[in-house]
Length: 186
Image (cartoon, rainbow, N blue to C red; front, top):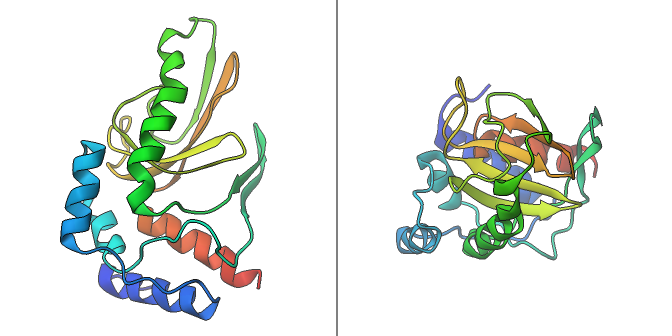
């Protein structure tokens, strides 16, 4: 097990290169600052370290969607891929707009939570980095008790029943999980 964050990121980049992922120089500090200004949020430090080495190209990625879990309350949980960090502001804005209606949810609506996330469908303290199949993926900047700032959470909003699941303690751990699936399915 690699303990050093930089070594973990280098190993992740090596695996990405091995599976034919488009090479990326990552973002420089000015670009990361611009992302934070656009988001009106501070990106977690571990995420900044990852982004300096990898900026997800978003589309045209030679990998298949990853099934994170087969037997969840909503059926399969599938991750389709990462958006480029330069698109996170637009994705976060559109996701928050999509979810804003949730502020007015009826008290009868049920929120099922797995992990240390708040039972809130709408929360402005999130950075969305992917969306697909009705699933919203974000870094949680306002976790529930026992949670970690920057944890990766999946949200599935449905009428009268919603599902929130903490998937990883941070974006690097989540990226390692996804890349290991991609590498194993080649």
